[in-house]
Length: 433
Image 1 (cartoon, rainbow, N blue to C red):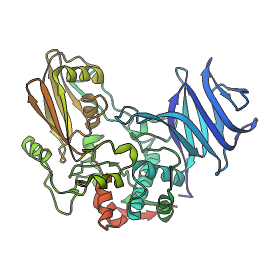
Image 2: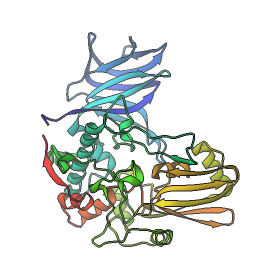
Image 3: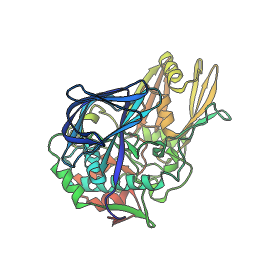
């Protein structure tokens, strides 16, 4: 690479926004803007109002350029859309701000920012900045690899796969990060969590970013598509369980422990595993340690290594109608048909009095069976009268880097390189700019 790239981050889509420009931002042919501002869509145009309530009209987009030290604040932006931590926050951002009109009288807010500044926010947003420097360095190299790999493959890979109405009684979907067309990456967990400038002290994250500047994971000369999730539950998952049907050598299932666990091959093995609590890096028994590892946003999720969710019959039927868009009628059976080696379900049969369907892959299964998302698709189901009880393992898709497991490894003294080589086997680390 010739040097550090700039990337574009889709922050949110809205019909109106308020904010504050700290420092001078420049609009082509108009000169500087500073202070409070607001913008909204009216009559097919973007109307932006400055601090004096002067209105500026733009038919398609507006680009607010800033010097590096300028900052803008966006007020009451929705974050965690569709997840149980969904809320509105006000966040400060560096870089340029682009407002782009989209269909249906909406506009997309995009932050254009140098990659290393973007990574500072990602690492601070994903995990607690008080973790050991070796963990922060590992996370920085992984996140840098993922975004650069995304940019490289964006035009090559398949977009969202969807086959609704169902084909042959199956609804198989996965959600590709390459589906964003107006920007490189979104600000949500669908891509990498990005909340703008970190709050409080973040000098250690800056140190981790600077010490690893331009360093990425390579496999056979290509930048790695370095996927990660919060907690694998003791065994990581194969790439193809969550996404398209191809084997990625460095995204194969491994044990999240200093010893090996066998892959889960039968329903009986999966049930025994999910109902057990084996020793593993991501099995954190001290809840005070969880607070040191997770950022505030994630601490409400208390039980993630092993968890339980209960529904009564009517509630689960209602959730299925709402989330899938299909009316199954009276729910009769839910049966796993195919699992990955970590126990995560890849294909699930749902049988009702009106309809039988098979759903996959792992994220779509989690969406259909919860008002937000089940923590993972590694679950087994028990029925007690009218109650459906889901016993589960892990938090997220489980592919690649296990964030909580990696944090625990760093607390035990593992180096950044040792952590990365544990989760992404066969890779090398190289500086590309």
